[in-house]
Length: 447
Image (cartoon, rainbow, N blue to C red):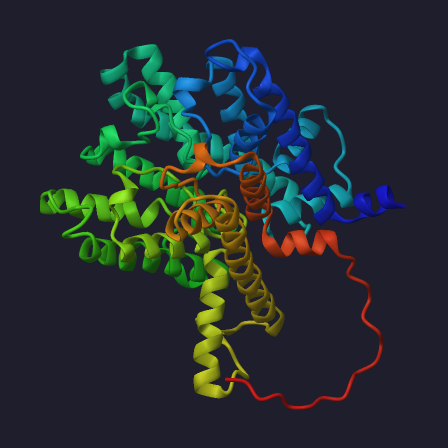
């Protein structure tokens, strides 16, 4: 009965599928061949790393370059690629290569994993997603190779360019810059506008979502022809880059950016605004952030990217719908939520509210739990928990010092964050057919 339920429920298949990939990655990373020292890595740490890679987070117990061998690094980048695209993408491509027919149930799974609007044409869309992903990652790798080959030599430069292009596009945040300084992320390229802009571009493109890609490619610059989803995503993305960048510039002027030139402050502010929305790279010590900058980073981490993208988090469409619902409540008593002359369905508003409550509750509850277990400050734990549930990967340096219990909690949060809090609730609960009766209504005072 239970197996039958899993097979007929696309959401549960996605949940189990990601879990299987994580467990496989954990076993591979725990092998002696995966570590640079040739010793087996503790399974809890391997599980943590595999979860972080598959859930495209970037939190890591060890520095990726210093601890993992070439084999281990390849396992990590493969997990990132599968996690970024979704395991159904890999399943679809294998089925196509084997010339196997893809049934209606499998098409429903693809629809769920890519957050598209229907089963029609999902296989064709999946092909386009995989093809465009590899093209964008290849372009990013070629552009990064010009800089990396100059600094690292040809072979290492190519390898690092590919690794960081995939990691940035999939919003993963894993890096190999431990060759310069352990756990330094992109700090060595702090003032390199060329590398910063390429990484930011890959992060933003990966975080837009597959539906938005289709709209942009099909309708080019004709914004009025875009789907309402694409219009909301593009508008909100622009706002969440520009406004936070200005705020970081002001908040950190005399703090993290105090000794920098105006040009470097602008570059660092832009990077600070882009990377918290699930990418996880950094170019300076995050411990130097002001309290205002730290709180802004936490907010951006929880918001995340777009639905059906490589990004995690609560999703920017959730934030946009909640804001539009607020405007409607003020203007028209909440009867009509309008965006670009289109009315948003009430179910969408209810789901957005549910997602907001789920993510807020998870952050608050697990911050309290980890604070009770660990000796770290509230700021450090809140940062870590938000980074995990938002699948970001930024940390104030406490990841490696967490106890095994906290590592398992953070791993679970990364897993939930990648699949989505509401998705997990749906998968764990049965949604029966509502009874064919309508209950009487009664007013409740709120606000």
